[in-house]
Image (tube, rainbow, N blue to C red; front, side, top):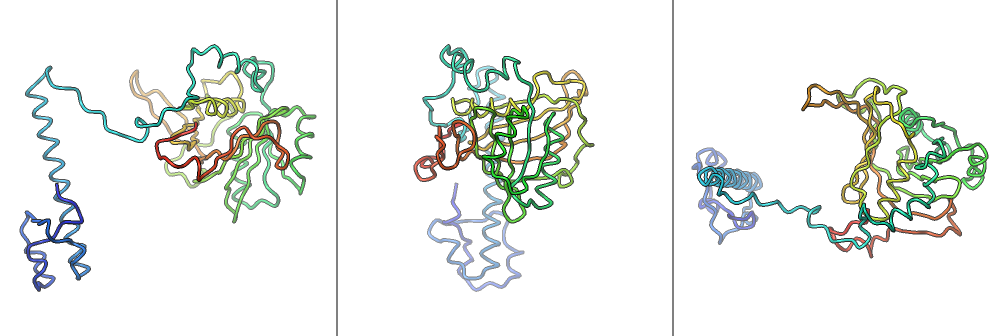
Amino acid sequence: MSSPGSMASGAAGSAEGPGDATRAPEQALFPPAFSVSEIKNKQRRHFMFLRWKQQQRKEKLANKKKRRKEREALGDEAPPKPVPKTIENQRVYDETTVDPNDEEVAFDESTDEFAPYFNRQTVPKILITTSDRPRGRTVRFCEQLSTIIPNSHVYYRRGLALKRIIPQCISRDFTDLIVINEDRKIPNGLVLSHLPDGPTAHFRMSSVRLRKEIKRKGKEPTKHQPEVILNNFTTRLGHSIGRMFACLFPHDPQFIGRQVATFHNQRDYIFFRFHRYIFRSEKKVGIQELGPRFTLKLRSLQKGTFDSKFGEYEWIHKHREMDTSRRKFHL
């Protein structure tokens, strides 16, 4: 199979006019001794590159058909299909990967800060606020977020520091504090603090889409308590983050509402989606996104409540030290 750096037409070096391109033979020849980058004419160079891409697709399709015929001819004796290599299945093993049957992990989770919620001793009550002087897009995002999370309340900062807000939240029996930060009128950060003893997570937020910006969206979400899906949080750090998200929603979802909130972790990016589903048959289900949607990237995890000066950090994302391999993930 030839490469784009070693392709050219046999007539590319000669002086041909633009009209000769339409009379070129269907089977292009790309001798390895000539590079397409040496073609001076931009239109001719672009045309030859498209011809090469077309030839690559034809060869790939022909090889696929050939392998299919061989498998049909061998029948049951055909070898198993090779598993394609992806970044996920080539992931570097993490020593902190959680075993569901590990007694030590079960003991730690039964005594951590989230244990009262999972033991049904507390009912989630969420305060959602913003940075100072939020713009319209951030305000609308907070309002739509409050319709997803039951028993959540939106309040505006009015210049108050978080250190003053947290004691007021604790005195009013709030269990979590969500702060939406913005930059240039666009939401770009999320601080999630579990009350009263922490921890506090700081996320970078991106790809925010409000309901009106989502194509083929469904009707407004109802007030039913949604189901929660936490997907692919496999390490000890990932378990802590997943349990933080779980604490935002009540214990018993109302299945009659057919609404589900999904936190999907893939390559340390957490994708949030909110859907309504319907069972069309015993095997088929239809889903409809309700919005909003956004993507989170963990920046730090701090012990206790928010304290930017004297807080003790459990984990901090250090770009130069931690991003040395594309196959190394932390959640």
